Length: 116
Image (tube, rainbow, N blue to C red):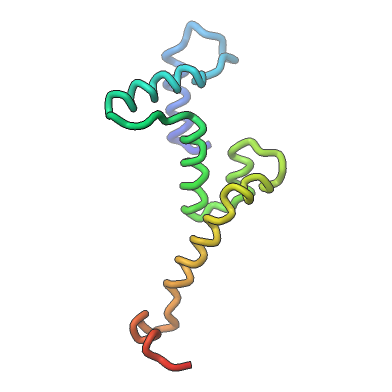
């Protein structure tokens, strides 16, 4: 967990001082109700916690975090097999996009005009 998440969780826990220290910090039902209300207010389609989980995983992988690490963060116990099936294509797309940045000292236009 990063420092911002720890700070957020401590704040939420402090707001619920009357609950046991072992109580769940954020209940799925509470999150879903808040997201439904926000989506309605903004005129957006319904968003679920699963949508946010998928967004998180996609954002991490696109940021360059390896799939086994993201898989562990998601709580998977399969070493990343499921995450590879669901998100593996993102790594390929990212890899192709990054390959386009390699110029070997030439601009993309110069490279396109050169003969092999």
